Image (cartoon, rainbow, N blue to C red):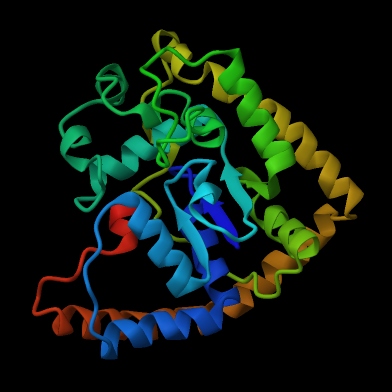
Length: 291
Protein backbone atom coordinates (compact mmCIF):
# COMPACT_ATOMS: atom_id res chain seq x y z
CA UNK A 1 0.00 0.00 0.00
CA UNK A 2 1.21 3.50 -0.85
CA UNK A 3 1.62 6.12 1.88
CA UNK A 4 2.07 9.68 0.63
CA UNK A 5 3.66 11.94 3.25
CA UNK A 6 2.10 15.30 2.41
CA UNK A 7 4.40 18.00 3.74
CA UNK A 8 2.77 21.44 3.84
CA UNK A 9 3.07 23.55 0.67
CA UNK A 10 5.08 21.03 -1.32
CA UNK A 11 2.50 20.53 -4.11
CA UNK A 12 0.85 17.83 -2.03
CA UNK A 13 -2.73 18.50 -3.12
CA UNK A 14 -1.75 18.41 -6.79
CA UNK A 15 0.04 15.12 -6.19
CA UNK A 16 -2.89 13.70 -4.24
CA UNK A 17 -5.25 14.46 -7.14
CA UNK A 18 -2.91 12.58 -9.48
CA UNK A 19 -2.81 9.60 -7.13
CA UNK A 20 -6.61 9.57 -6.92
CA UNK A 21 -6.83 9.29 -10.70
CA UNK A 22 -4.55 6.26 -10.57
CA UNK A 23 -6.65 4.59 -7.86
CA UNK A 24 -9.89 5.17 -9.76
CA UNK A 25 -11.71 1.97 -8.72
CA UNK A 26 -11.13 2.74 -5.05
CA UNK A 27 -12.21 6.34 -5.66
CA UNK A 28 -15.56 5.25 -7.11
CA UNK A 29 -16.18 3.06 -4.06
CA UNK A 30 -15.22 6.01 -1.84
CA UNK A 31 -17.81 8.38 -3.34
CA UNK A 32 -20.47 5.69 -3.66
CA UNK A 33 -20.07 4.83 0.01
CA UNK A 34 -20.44 8.44 1.02
CA UNK A 35 -23.54 9.05 -1.10
CA UNK A 36 -25.47 5.83 -0.58
CA UNK A 37 -23.97 4.18 2.47
CA UNK A 38 -24.59 4.73 6.15
CA UNK A 39 -21.39 5.81 7.79
CA UNK A 40 -20.20 5.74 11.37
CA UNK A 41 -18.06 8.74 12.23
CA UNK A 42 -14.56 7.87 13.32
CA UNK A 43 -12.29 10.30 15.04
CA UNK A 44 -8.59 10.41 15.66
CA UNK A 45 -5.57 10.23 13.44
CA UNK A 46 -5.03 6.45 13.51
CA UNK A 47 -8.67 5.70 12.65
CA UNK A 48 -8.56 8.26 9.84
CA UNK A 49 -5.41 6.77 8.35
CA UNK A 50 -6.93 3.28 8.35
CA UNK A 51 -10.21 4.52 6.87
CA UNK A 52 -8.53 6.37 4.03
CA UNK A 53 -6.45 3.32 3.21
CA UNK A 54 -9.61 1.21 3.00
CA UNK A 55 -11.60 3.72 0.93
CA UNK A 56 -8.99 5.08 -1.46
CA UNK A 57 -6.44 2.29 -1.57
CA UNK A 58 -3.68 4.63 -0.46
CA UNK A 59 -2.99 7.05 2.38
CA UNK A 60 -2.30 10.75 1.88
CA UNK A 61 -2.05 13.37 4.58
CA UNK A 62 0.09 15.42 6.91
CA UNK A 63 1.47 12.29 8.52
CA UNK A 64 4.97 11.18 9.34
CA UNK A 65 7.17 8.28 8.39
CA UNK A 66 6.19 5.34 10.59
CA UNK A 67 2.51 4.99 9.71
CA UNK A 68 3.26 1.62 8.15
CA UNK A 69 3.15 0.22 11.70
CA UNK A 70 -0.63 0.56 11.55
CA UNK A 71 -0.94 -2.05 8.80
CA UNK A 72 -0.21 -5.74 8.41
CA UNK A 73 0.51 -5.34 4.70
CA UNK A 74 3.58 -4.12 2.87
CA UNK A 75 3.68 -0.31 2.69
CA UNK A 76 5.68 1.97 0.43
CA UNK A 77 6.27 5.67 1.02
CA UNK A 78 6.55 8.67 -1.28
CA UNK A 79 6.73 12.41 -0.65
CA UNK A 80 7.39 15.84 -2.15
CA UNK A 81 9.93 18.39 -0.91
CA UNK A 82 10.46 22.13 -1.43
CA UNK A 83 13.18 24.72 -0.84
CA UNK A 84 12.68 25.31 2.92
CA UNK A 85 12.46 29.11 3.09
CA UNK A 86 10.09 29.23 0.14
CA UNK A 87 7.96 26.55 1.82
CA UNK A 88 7.55 28.58 5.00
CA UNK A 89 6.75 31.77 3.09
CA UNK A 90 4.14 29.95 1.02
CA UNK A 91 2.59 28.39 4.12
CA UNK A 92 2.27 31.82 5.73
CA UNK A 93 0.73 33.48 2.65
CA UNK A 94 -1.71 30.64 2.11
CA UNK A 95 -2.71 30.59 5.77
CA UNK A 96 -3.19 34.35 5.92
CA UNK A 97 -5.44 34.49 2.84
CA UNK A 98 -7.49 31.30 3.23
CA UNK A 99 -10.14 31.20 5.96
CA UNK A 100 -10.27 27.40 5.74
CA UNK A 101 -6.56 27.04 6.40
CA UNK A 102 -5.68 25.37 9.69
CA UNK A 103 -3.31 28.22 10.57
CA UNK A 104 -5.60 31.07 9.45
CA UNK A 105 -6.52 32.33 12.93
CA UNK A 106 -2.86 32.54 13.87
CA UNK A 107 -1.60 34.03 10.59
CA UNK A 108 -4.33 36.49 9.56
CA UNK A 109 -3.19 39.45 11.70
CA UNK A 110 0.51 38.67 11.84
CA UNK A 111 3.47 39.54 9.66
CA UNK A 112 5.65 36.75 8.32
CA UNK A 113 8.19 37.43 11.06
CA UNK A 114 5.51 37.29 13.75
CA UNK A 115 4.14 34.09 12.27
CA UNK A 116 7.55 32.44 12.63
CA UNK A 117 8.45 34.09 15.93
CA UNK A 118 5.36 32.61 17.58
CA UNK A 119 7.00 29.18 17.35
CA UNK A 120 3.54 27.77 17.87
CA UNK A 121 3.55 24.84 15.45
CA UNK A 122 6.20 22.14 15.16
CA UNK A 123 5.61 22.07 11.40
CA UNK A 124 7.43 25.42 11.22
CA UNK A 125 10.60 24.05 12.81
CA UNK A 126 12.39 22.06 10.09
CA UNK A 127 9.10 20.47 9.13
CA UNK A 128 10.45 18.31 6.31
CA UNK A 129 12.96 16.62 8.60
CA UNK A 130 10.28 16.25 11.27
CA UNK A 131 7.82 14.49 8.95
CA UNK A 132 10.45 12.25 7.41
CA UNK A 133 12.23 11.33 10.64
CA UNK A 134 8.96 10.55 12.43
CA UNK A 135 8.66 9.75 16.09
CA UNK A 136 11.63 7.65 17.19
CA UNK A 137 9.40 6.05 19.86
CA UNK A 138 6.74 5.13 17.28
CA UNK A 139 3.84 6.69 19.18
CA UNK A 140 3.17 9.90 17.21
CA UNK A 141 1.97 9.36 13.63
CA UNK A 142 1.65 13.06 12.84
CA UNK A 143 5.14 14.44 13.29
CA UNK A 144 8.42 14.14 15.18
CA UNK A 145 7.20 15.55 18.53
CA UNK A 146 10.48 16.93 19.85
CA UNK A 147 10.14 20.50 21.17
CA UNK A 148 11.26 23.50 19.10
CA UNK A 149 15.00 23.63 18.55
CA UNK A 150 15.62 20.11 19.85
CA UNK A 151 16.15 18.23 16.57
CA UNK A 152 19.64 16.77 16.29
CA UNK A 153 21.92 14.82 13.98
CA UNK A 154 20.15 11.56 14.77
CA UNK A 155 16.83 12.99 13.61
CA UNK A 156 18.47 14.30 10.46
CA UNK A 157 20.19 11.00 9.70
CA UNK A 158 16.91 9.13 10.22
CA UNK A 159 15.12 11.52 7.86
CA UNK A 160 17.80 11.08 5.19
CA UNK A 161 17.70 7.30 5.49
CA UNK A 162 13.90 7.24 5.31
CA UNK A 163 13.93 9.53 2.28
CA UNK A 164 16.63 7.78 0.27
CA UNK A 165 16.05 4.19 1.36
CA UNK A 166 12.52 4.12 2.73
CA UNK A 167 10.70 6.04 -0.01
CA UNK A 168 10.09 4.44 -3.38
CA UNK A 169 9.85 7.95 -4.82
CA UNK A 170 10.24 11.59 -3.90
CA UNK A 171 9.86 14.69 -6.03
CA UNK A 172 10.55 18.41 -5.75
CA UNK A 173 7.95 21.15 -5.92
CA UNK A 174 10.26 23.41 -7.93
CA UNK A 175 10.66 20.62 -10.50
CA UNK A 176 7.10 19.33 -10.41
CA UNK A 177 6.76 18.36 -14.07
CA UNK A 178 10.09 16.55 -14.08
CA UNK A 179 9.03 14.87 -10.83
CA UNK A 180 5.88 13.53 -12.48
CA UNK A 181 7.80 12.10 -15.41
CA UNK A 182 10.24 10.50 -12.98
CA UNK A 183 7.40 9.06 -10.93
CA UNK A 184 5.76 7.66 -14.05
CA UNK A 185 8.93 5.79 -14.96
CA UNK A 186 9.89 4.67 -11.47
CA UNK A 187 6.43 3.61 -10.24
CA UNK A 188 4.70 2.88 -13.54
CA UNK A 189 2.06 5.53 -12.78
CA UNK A 190 -0.13 5.99 -15.82
CA UNK A 191 -2.13 9.23 -15.37
CA UNK A 192 0.02 12.26 -14.57
CA UNK A 193 -1.75 15.22 -16.19
CA UNK A 194 -2.83 17.75 -13.58
CA UNK A 195 -4.28 21.09 -12.54
CA UNK A 196 -2.54 23.10 -9.84
CA UNK A 197 -4.23 22.74 -6.45
CA UNK A 198 -4.38 24.64 -3.17
CA UNK A 199 -2.43 27.67 -4.33
CA UNK A 200 -2.26 30.65 -2.01
CA UNK A 201 -2.90 34.25 -3.02
CA UNK A 202 0.32 35.59 -4.45
CA UNK A 203 3.71 33.95 -4.58
CA UNK A 204 6.13 33.20 -1.80
CA UNK A 205 8.20 36.21 -2.89
CA UNK A 206 5.48 38.52 -1.50
CA UNK A 207 6.37 37.64 2.07
CA UNK A 208 9.05 39.60 3.86
CA UNK A 209 12.67 38.53 3.28
CA UNK A 210 13.70 35.58 5.39
CA UNK A 211 15.43 36.99 8.46
CA UNK A 212 18.62 35.44 9.82
CA UNK A 213 16.82 35.34 13.17
CA UNK A 214 14.91 32.30 11.89
CA UNK A 215 17.71 30.38 10.21
CA UNK A 216 17.39 27.72 12.91
CA UNK A 217 13.91 26.90 11.57
CA UNK A 218 15.40 25.70 8.28
CA UNK A 219 18.86 24.54 9.37
CA UNK A 220 18.16 20.81 9.08
CA UNK A 221 15.71 21.21 6.20
CA UNK A 222 18.31 23.11 4.17
CA UNK A 223 20.74 20.23 4.54
CA UNK A 224 18.06 17.70 3.62
CA UNK A 225 16.89 19.64 0.58
CA UNK A 226 20.42 20.17 -0.71
CA UNK A 227 21.06 16.43 -0.58
CA UNK A 228 17.66 15.62 -2.08
CA UNK A 229 18.20 18.03 -4.98
CA UNK A 230 21.56 16.49 -5.82
CA UNK A 231 20.15 12.96 -5.81
CA UNK A 232 17.09 14.09 -7.75
CA UNK A 233 19.24 15.42 -10.59
CA UNK A 234 21.16 12.14 -10.64
CA UNK A 235 17.90 10.22 -10.94
CA UNK A 236 16.70 12.38 -13.81
CA UNK A 237 19.90 11.62 -15.67
CA UNK A 238 19.71 7.92 -14.83
CA UNK A 239 16.14 7.66 -16.15
CA UNK A 240 16.92 9.74 -19.23
CA UNK A 241 14.56 12.64 -18.48
CA UNK A 242 15.74 15.69 -20.42
CA UNK A 243 14.59 19.31 -20.46
CA UNK A 244 13.06 18.76 -23.90
CA UNK A 245 10.97 15.87 -22.57
CA UNK A 246 9.77 18.04 -19.69
CA UNK A 247 8.85 20.81 -22.16
CA UNK A 248 6.86 18.40 -24.31
CA UNK A 249 5.02 17.15 -21.24
CA UNK A 250 4.08 20.72 -20.29
CA UNK A 251 2.61 21.26 -23.75
CA UNK A 252 0.54 18.08 -23.50
CA UNK A 253 -0.58 18.97 -20.00
CA UNK A 254 -1.87 22.36 -21.20
CA UNK A 255 -4.00 20.59 -23.80
CA UNK A 256 -5.37 18.22 -21.17
CA UNK A 257 -6.55 20.97 -18.82
CA UNK A 258 -9.98 21.35 -20.44
CA UNK A 259 -10.82 17.73 -19.63
CA UNK A 260 -9.37 18.06 -16.14
CA UNK A 261 -11.54 21.11 -15.42
CA UNK A 262 -14.62 19.18 -16.56
CA UNK A 263 -13.67 16.37 -14.20
CA UNK A 264 -13.32 18.91 -11.40
CA UNK A 265 -16.85 20.15 -12.06
CA UNK A 266 -18.18 16.62 -11.64
CA UNK A 267 -16.35 16.32 -8.34
CA UNK A 268 -17.88 19.60 -7.17
CA UNK A 269 -21.36 18.25 -7.87
CA UNK A 270 -20.59 15.10 -5.91
CA UNK A 271 -19.33 17.12 -2.96
CA UNK A 272 -22.52 19.19 -2.92
CA UNK A 273 -24.57 16.00 -2.86
CA UNK A 274 -22.50 14.79 0.07
CA UNK A 275 -22.97 18.03 1.97
CA UNK A 276 -26.76 17.95 1.46
CA UNK A 277 -26.87 14.33 2.55
CA UNK A 278 -25.18 15.34 5.77
CA UNK A 279 -27.92 17.95 6.48
CA UNK A 280 -25.69 20.92 6.00
CA UNK A 281 -23.06 19.72 8.46
CA UNK A 282 -20.62 17.56 6.52
CA UNK A 283 -19.01 14.66 8.29
CA UNK A 284 -15.50 15.54 9.32
CA UNK A 285 -13.37 14.12 6.56
CA UNK A 286 -10.14 12.24 6.79
CA UNK A 287 -8.41 15.14 5.07
CA UNK A 288 -9.68 17.51 7.79
CA UNK A 289 -8.35 15.26 10.53
CA UNK A 290 -5.05 14.73 8.73
CA UNK A 291 -4.90 18.51 8.16
